Amino acid sequence: MPAVIGLFIGTMIDRAFRVFPFFTVVFLFLGILSGLWSLYKSVKTLI
Amino acid sequence: MESVHIGVHPLWHLYGWTFHSDTLISAWIVTAVLIAFAVFVRTILKIRPGLLQSIVEIGVEGLNGTLVERMGDKGRKYFPFVATLFLFIITSNWLGVLPLELKPPTADLNTTAGLAVLTIIMVQVFGMIDKGPIRYFKRFFEPNPVFFPLNVIEELAKPLSLSVRLFGNIFGKETVIMILSGLVALPLFYPIPILALSLLIGAIQAYIFMLLTVFYISMALEGH
Image 1 (tube, rainbow over the protein chains, first blue to last red):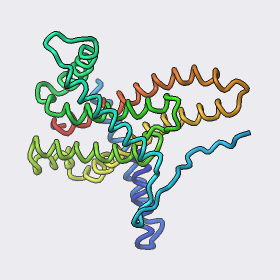
Image 2 (image 1 turned 45 degrees about the vertical axis):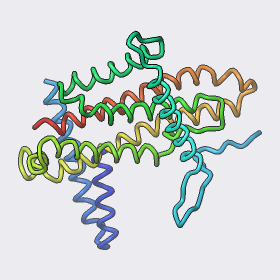
Image 3 (image 1 turned 90 degrees about the horizontal axis):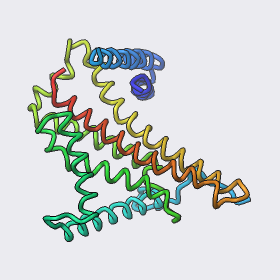
Image 4 (image 1 turned 30 degrees about the horizontal axis):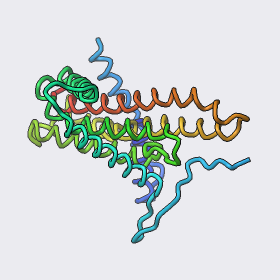
């Protein structure tokens, strides 16, 4: 889900500034990182 | 064979806005039913509770217990919001079981997205009221300012997953019922097991939505 949000934000910015694929890649990467970060946090509360 | 329309809503156009009329009408019906029920229960309250009052009290105590278990005594403040969400969603989900031409409002992504966005905005508001805006926004910069975009994207993903989960379950259930009653030879009997299952799905989805709301509120209140 965070990855989808990141992709969405990235494509929105790219469409506004017509610089595809720069922001798409950056925000997709941030989204994936964010998903991993929340996974890490939830695992940390479990153990 | 009667054609099956899935995900098609009759539209109203008003002042340049477009409304899904079936969703809107069934949401109004749910609201009216809930208000009427609340007013009715209010009139029959007694010191020695009757059957209906006992059932309502068990429900209220259960929801209150969930909040207190998660957040301690300060969880009681959030009871009205959380309980309203739960009651609205469970009534909406069960509306689809009645043999009326009513679709549950939660089978429309607009309703569930509205509820989810409202929930996440209210979570931020609750957090800011409880901790003060500056101390609250510090939570986005933990453990390190580098994590700010990650935390913001994580926060934005919450309404998406809340709304799509509820919508997917209820819409899927509605679609299965519609196809079963349209295709098989005995449309009266085949959907019955699915209808029984849909009561369960409706209750579980409303409970999950409420539980996640409680979870998000408690995360906003405590420091990481």
